[in-house]
Length: 342
Ligand SMILES: Nc1nc2c(c(=O)[nH]1)N[C@H]1C(S)=C(S)[C@@H](COP(=O)(O)O)O[C@H]1N2
Ligand SMILES: [Mo]
Image 1 (tube, rainbow, N blue to C red):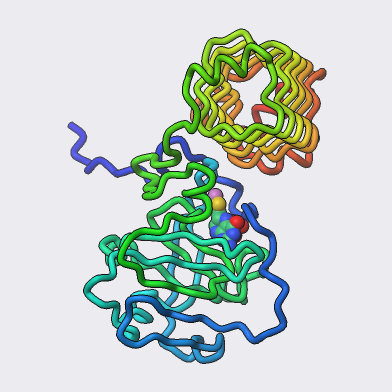
Image 2: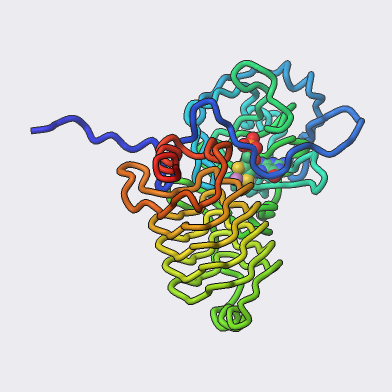
């Protein structure tokens, strides 16, 4: 008899680990150009609004946290070591009023990128306002000098270049959540990645008759088992699209965003993915003979089952992808592509 307690898995469903030394950069690359000193403001429904300089913040009691990062585009990174001030300590100093139900984090970035959480979840999540990563100042590209780190949520809830925290009486869904159809709760254990499509099935079929989706933004498009060979989808925003088993031979997805797209068992022979965003895309069982993947971003993409290497995509020497791109893949995925794409 085996009486070892069943271990709960450490990797949430449909995530894969990046190589330990990798930390992909996702979203904005830099804060707003602004020569004024960096401050953090907490305002809105609080009894004591506050403004701190970075130096003042760093004088508060800091803690170290080892966090597992889970990005919505299916890559995860274990044991990321951050140091900073717990958000709950900052809130204790400001005292949110009884009407406050949500908290919004706003970035010192060109578009004032923002994201939100429900106050009711804060105790469990215990987010960190972080300055250090692995004992070093956080790199600017990863949100330095100051970002939030929210354990237990997809990483889009962790805001880079934190400038303002606002306590609100109702939710203000974030930039990704509101604009790109990302799930507002973002629990990786429940796979809360995306919300529903923004277009009706009848409208989709009309677009497909013209075989032209170029420059269109279609969230969670549902298009399985269709004949879409030769489809033009240049620059289309097709996050989370479902093209399972569809015929997409010679389609043009150059510059398109297919992050988290479902392309299992699709015919993608001679399809153009040049410079596309393929982060988290699922190519298991797809035909990629003659496909052009050059310059496409492949973080979190899947080409075979992560554990068994079964259901592998068909790839050969006519599939164009560079060795450098393969660095973005998990070790298993990289090994599969290397053996197959001689
Ligand atoms: N200001 C800002 N914060 C942001 C983003 C962004 O584009 N702008 N992207 C989010 C997303 S989608 C992810 S996955 C993480 C990525 O952080 P990283 O680039 O340090 O990996 O930051 C989140 N915070
Ligand atoms: Mo993300």
